[in-house]
Length: 477
Ligand code: ADP
Image 1 (cartoon, helix red, strand yellow):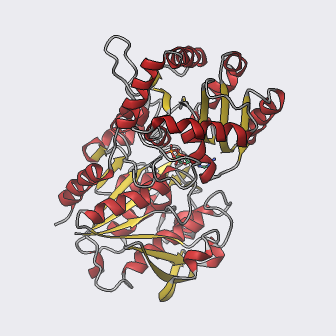
Image 2: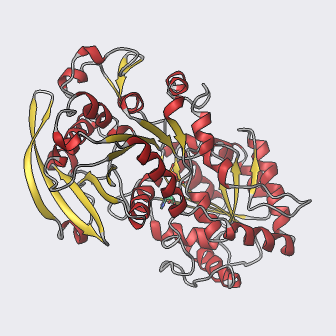
Image 3: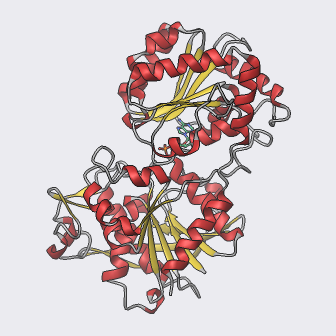
């Protein structure tokens, strides 16, 4: 089976969130099960020269973006056995970061067309499945069905579209249909791309793909309701027959405290005592008093509303009254970074805030903390809680999306559970759950049991990849 995996961020080349982790780990797991999988992504300016210097140029050709004809280079890298193609156009992609530009609509319209054209330049590779991810790739299912369907390369191809986050939809003015997408106004209808007064790339993916998946079972249900549906719940109910939830896995070869090169002391469940050295090192690095006994509560997160930061800011004073140290590593909206930086300066021994994106420090936080707070408003899957569990750091989460599917609340009668959870998006419910968790931290025997169950929790990619393969098989002829 041949699968072209299309993503706009892939670890280790570039990452803004969990999509990058998935876009490396899932193809790797598919390949291990015999799938001929190839990744294709934009060649961003921020990709390290360690990789770009090793690229081979395969072809160059023109790609139409509405009335424009833009240069496209197709470059190739074999990364640890995984074939990765890079779409090269410096005008669109030689910029810092991945997203957030005024012309993102044009950039990713180009990317979608460029992917279709690139397939025609990949020797001997007629995909059985094109697997697209998030709004940036949403036009590909449409192009496959309505524009490229007669090309021999695509005759057999089925199309899967995975929603990693329904919040980000790629909505643009209707005029882009003709100006950028090379389509006509016939697509500006409720059945096709129309979304309020604009057109939505996300909707294109949902409407035109053969199968739509999202990254947890619970999120697949939630997005069919108005609270979580971001205005697309009606459409998703209608398309429920082709909508599936497949919970993300975690790559335990990378997220492994026994091998992680960023830690001062590697450890496993069997040598959990060594975790303490990481706690002391974290406290030292962040200027907190070095104390092995005080519980360290941490967050590693994008600083956006989705992550439930409003609950934390609402009861910050109460949190800091507890016997704990609070650590936050995050980047994003300034309303939150300003808030946490202020508190870090006002309560220097209690809270440390590191504003930025730092993967090494993230590992040190996962290893050095005792509890990991993730009170998300919604959470398609969430990898951070899986990483924290792998590092023996007990998650405290809101029961939503993938958090609900992966964290089992501690039950003091049976002793079962790998974390703590609360149901409603309510600051005091979160606070009380955190207080309860801290009270259990103080009972060493109970705590060790919860840590051990957290470390035993496994959401392996091989098992999840099997589910994708079963869905792929239903799509190819
Ligand atoms: P999302 O994709 O919504 O951001 P996930 O929990 O699925 O959330 O994945 C987030 C990933 O990004 C995790 O691997 C997490 O460790 C990482 N991450 C988030 N913020 C930072 C940061 N400031 N520095 C380093 N890594 C981060």
